[in-house]
Image (cartoon, rainbow, N blue to C red; front, side):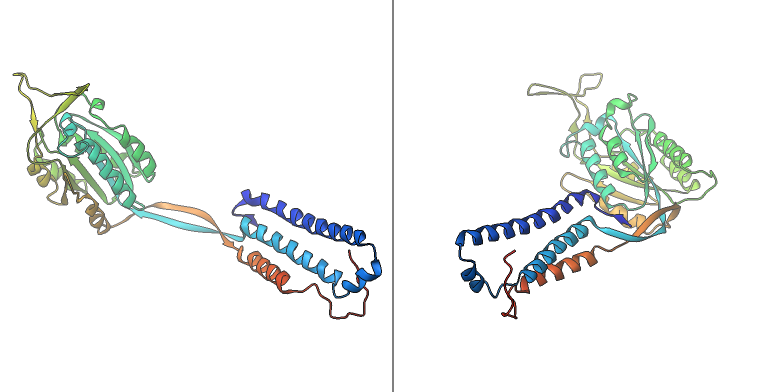
Length: 343
């Protein structure tokens, strides 16, 4: 037998407390009776009171409190080993952290909004392994494939442009690192798992041959999804803020650089998957879960758990019967011929 909530062991102290209250009550009755003086008169007045019934009521109440404490502690019996299989897909999220993702055409910025949308996506996933790749002009694996979504969130929080100084948006680097992440997570390199890649980017300044990337991903059994972040109207890219002034990125001629969402490349990348949009007032990224659910699930392995049968209902039932019985049982005796005992 084990206890589900052993921290409620302190509730057992209520049992001696209740018992002490009944003793104190009996002591006060004897003390009050001694002050009245005439024991013969007192015996006649209290002839209907049964001390035995009083003791039974006290025992029922005390035992009832004991069973309440036991129910709170959650007794469990009959442990058995249960095997649970873990199934899902391998999903790599490739997040663009180039300078243009700092643009504020969607609040608070493209990058911050992307992080928030990914966190919402993680709340919807169940059983899938998720990894994180950051890219701009280069790429690296920020978080390997894992079912620990809390770890993914932590790595996501620190994603920013300073992590990759190489400018640009290199989709080929993102794909290469994503493929590395898939292979690293597989014990058998030839093992075929359901793999999906979600690229989140504004699609700007990409330096890759899109058809070749789509074919390479297909050859490796990777289905590419893409999410475009931002608006198609141009906006400047904030570089720094000082006081109330904001400095924007400029080119070599001193002109302010304007960035906008380029959906063409992203839609090409996701031609075999699906394209989603993260806009100023809406996002369709949550719909990716419907696409993932339609994919074949891979078994990641199994875990064994000890399963117990909860038995808190029984002490709770006994407590109810005893406490209810204590309320309905009278301390008056039926046989009035017996002499009363005031203890």
